[in-house]
Length: 302
Image (cartoon, rainbow, N blue to C red; front, top):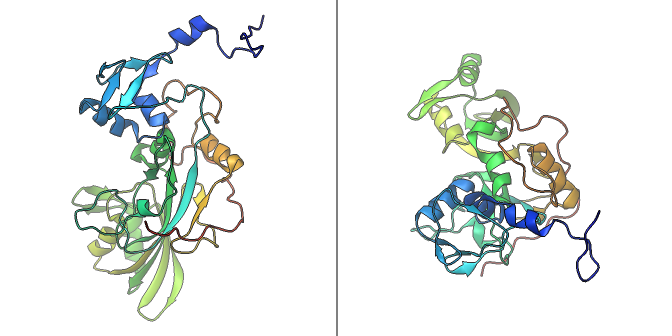
């Protein structure tokens, strides 16, 4: 029999069910958009998180009735999940994907819309001299599902080389080349035209190591003159999204992306347990379609 509040509204959970509901603290902080689960564990370990007035410990569980503070400020945990936001940004060369840079270089975070009670989390990175598609979200677990190497989400790049690749070099790239941090390989690579010494190729990786494309080409004695990320997982960069412009996914597109990653839609309770192991993208199938609406103009720097 349904239960109702004193205002006549149906209760979503019995009071005793609400009290008994609990989740790992670092998981709920990530779901609140404060960063990845690993980042939240580090934040707790550093003593920056309090639970009901005392310093929280790594591995603790939290309930809806608990009061959680981060750096002294109360954080509202998403027990009733709020729809996450996902932003596409065409990063130009000359911007760093970091909030703090000792050299004072321009940051991609300088351009993002301001949030209240949430935080933009970048999905992977692009180095200072690389342009292309960069994703941001307020959903820490979504960022983790897209960027963590164990999920093997595809990243597609357009790369311009000074000089062409011989068939033997293309075979080496797909079989694997030993770099200082282990063997790296491309999933597939195809010629994409060019003139003279400048030759374009499209290639796909399944991990996001630092400067991986450039280091692979350097191992073959070739120089990358331009590098553009054109796709991340199911999201391809819209043609209208010019350098320095951004575009936010609508509700249907966000729901499709969550489903593709094996996460429950907004409004549903967080998925228990870990996603099933897969070789390739989190969930193969149709890509969430990005609408053709006009992208926003570059934000002015403050």
